[in-house]
Length: 481
Image 1 (cartoon, helix red, strand yellow):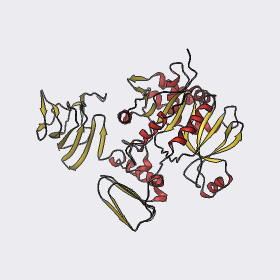
Image 2 (cartoon, rainbow, N blue to C red):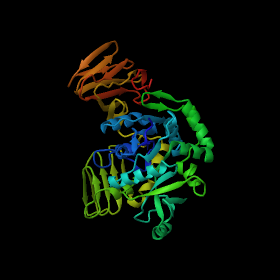
Image 3 (cartoon, rainbow, N blue to C red):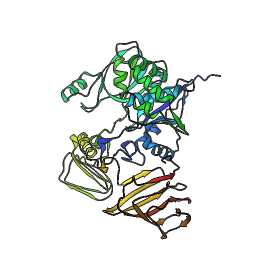
Image 4 (cartoon, one colour):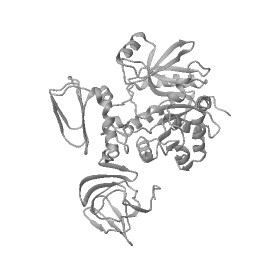
């Protein structure tokens, strides 16, 4: 017997690189997976908000995540930390912007013959009023269930120049979208605020999967055809779904707004808006982080071990050591173990210039932190020199590294805590706290944690070349051979 409930599939777009929050956000660990305040990451907070959509007339599924293949285990780990499981994780082999990402989610949603309402949100936003967010999103779902594309527009509280705007007009049943407007200059933004009827474009939208596919057929059939070819060539590994790599590389890169949304006004495709006044912020730059942070009486905000004296409206984010600032106004200071950013707060979006230079110079600080997360745990490169490197390594309970060897380096392992099961050539040994072993150059080896608590070791590498690409994998639990 068919259900009279509206079927809802939350879709979380988790593929962004977050370069404007460097040095905390990096390609290998972008901002959506960071804990900027409290105890949960932006991605986890987004998943919680969407899980809370329940209503008597709704049937809410587990979320569909669209993200980068490199971050697949971060997605699963962070969902498990909040006791959630995804319906699927769609792994883009190459970033092609939001329109192809949404198309993958729509094709996945239609696969079983259903046509759920997709509730689509980026993974890197914050909301302070959960009740208002839930109410607005439920209104949007009910409108979208009738066939309209529904976007969430943010009620502006200042003449913001960093966001795109949506111009609305009142119609029977609510607000219709009349026009999308690019990021304005300050004078134009002030006029929008004075005139009313303008809202910030949140990047959140709600629509049936079939409605998105039909809109693409009309406006961008090239994106639909290329994405469908990649979907047809997909491979599935449990929760992970990998579109065809070569096929997806041929998909045109385009945003949802440019591909469809901005083309809808004036056509027969209904485009509606629901106003959202819920303490929303997209955390696009350090200026936005300062805006949503708790502040002292002088407007200063800080995270970590920071001492602030005679300063105003300044943000300090300390990660690994004490940071002291004196006499600063409207400044951002962000410290990590391997990099420090100091910026005028109003120009913090321009940090991407630094990131671009790091990329052009092929420096590691653009992509990875000193502490690098892996599906089996993490490693922290605590010291290095011309022919040596020292790492602190944590292996999760039950996890193991690949069976591997190195052409250019030998390794010494010292167990700090937990139990290590070590394959060293043709021998398998168990080591506990304060015990050690030596892995000669060229020796096949593997490190595993057979215990129920995290394993930590100190690894001392020595040799002529110490790069991460000097690894020959023979067996790997995570498909990296």
